[in-house]
Length: 182
Image (cartoon, rainbow, N blue to C red; front, side, top):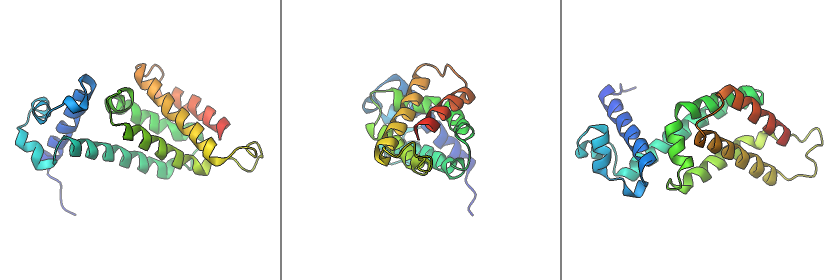
């Protein structure tokens, strides 16, 4: 496996951080390559060494977060709701600037929220309780839409309001609610 140059990683992280910070200040469409370069303290040409344009940069940033969330999905489904959700809320807290820019902003690509919702709904599919009979009258698609929309909505609320509760408290409350719903 080829060794990754730390300078490249450092530059890419600076560019990602710059675009996130700028998205909290103005519309993505109004952000220029020069804005990103200035914020990251690199030359414009450096951006083009790593990305085709600002859209490619944003796409790669989004992809990296979905990759991280997907990796958590692989082991989280083996845990109880509360235990499974703690790492997610810790992740949202650690990357609150990104999620704030992507969820709390009206200017963020709408496809992000849709994709996040679809990801959570897909993850919830195996969690529907069909054995107890309490969901006998409910269809999977309605239950998944309800639970997924509620989960994304709570994440949005939590971030917009400055994360008023620690991740463990959020995980316990949301886990309880999802356990009741699914």
